[in-house]
Amino acid sequence: MLGALERLLGDHIVEGVASIPAGSLELAKQHHPEWLPVKDSRIRVYEGAPHNIADSMAEQAARHVLRLVQSAGDQDLLIVLISGGGSALLPCPVEGVSLDEKRKGSQLLAKAGATIHYINNFRKCISLVKGGKLAEAAYPTKLLALILSDVIGDPLDVIASGPTVPNTTPTQEVLRTMDSYGVREAMPTSIIHHLQHTHTTPISCPIGERAFQNVQNVIIGNNETATSAAAQRAEELGYTTYVWSHGVEGEARTIGEIYARVAMALVSSSPCPTSSLSPDGFCPTPRLAEDLQRLCSSLPYLRSHLPLCIIGAGEPTVRLRGAGRGGRSQELALAVAIWLDRLAREKTLGVVPHDIIQFLSAGTDGEDGPCDAAGGVVGVGVVRRAGDQGMDPQAHLDNNDSYGFFSKLWEGRHHIRSGLTGTNVMDVHVLCVNRASP
Image (cartoon, rainbow, N blue to C red; front, top):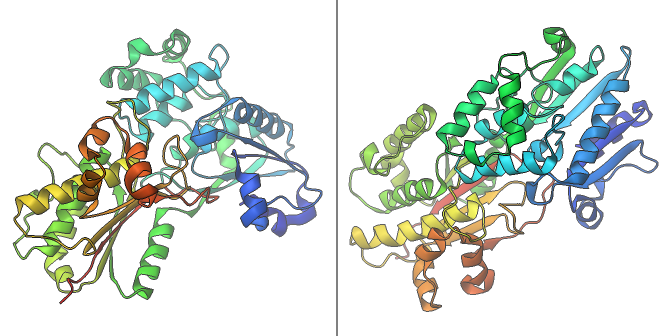
């Protein structure tokens, strides 16, 4: 985004600040020189937030951004480029809350399985730039925000915690969220004090709604962009394609069971009631429930049009129970492998050839959790192959150690390692079902 904007606007740019993921400049030098700032660039670049975790360099960049927008005049135009990962790349805690305390609070919610909506609501209420405060600091300067969405449904107030969008989340709601996830007592006292102190007062500054009259927010890409490209490539490879959902959310291991059930329904001739796709006790969002219903209704048609590529996208969550490493995409892929093996045996389908069903889950930014992998790819034979190596897939899943599992399995060949991609539009899931060999 930065490189393209500089090449378009040239000398019209007076000054700028960019906060980008650690390692991006080296990646750009080696593989994508068009991403780099132009020679004699007027934009200062900070690299920080390794593995999407806010750090001091990202905070330094955020405070520089804040100073820059505050210095702009009413005849200037501020162009704000926002993408997935923006929350970690723009940390600027309120007075009295340290970066370490803010980071701990976000991690407590994430480990408890909170969705990005809840986590970003929390971040907005303890930030000097999120929740519309960047736009308030810029007033009366006109502001144009160009946004790549990494959130289901593209809610502007959630993407990167909404630095250019009014915050409508009461701090009381954030406190209730902490209680519902059982993390309030573990929260740093400075955060609780701030939220309790501000819960009866407006979160925004006195400028209020006037600041946002000068703001234009434009979504320029989202996960539909990624799934459309994936579907086009699959069609070029000879697959019938079906994009079933852009709103896949829920616990990763539960979503993994759903994908495995869909795969087995496609290789079975038995009717498929919608309930057979949803695990017991799973309560999908209304949007996902509708997508599941539509997918189930389409199964008879899809079975007759193999080879088939079913594509989904979204942002599942992981509830940490163990001490392993990994991320939601790797955990989802591992869960799919376990359930494919289990369902194949339960349905007595005989030996299902390993190349009939293949499943991929990966983060579009090239990172999945605090590790160097983007995701994983699995098939029916993964559990058997792991057993041959003396590995217990279920034990790895129980320990949240999907990274350890895929690193060891077949010398890491089931890992997806793309490196940083320069963008983030959530995760992409690809389920391929091929014809059985004659």
